[in-house]
Length: 67
Image (cartoon, rainbow, N blue to C red; front, side):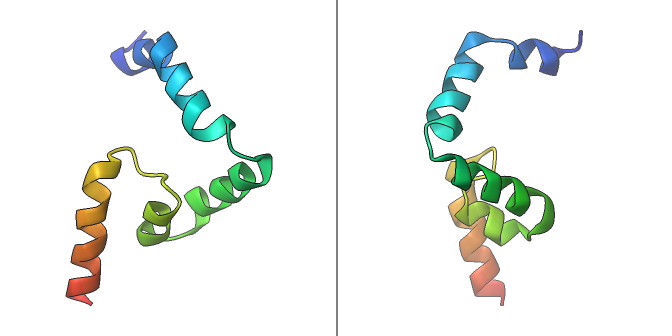
């Protein structure tokens, strides 16, 4: 197996996934799936679908300044 697959199988990753996504109501998770596949990057930041969330705020602000 590659390194990424081994990381996905770690218990701490599943615990984080549970705390961040599965503790929310199911309708939010369905909406998040739609946003993840069909919306722009700025909307993904609003729905917390970015892997490195602490950097996402700066990226979003840069989008606003550039616009």
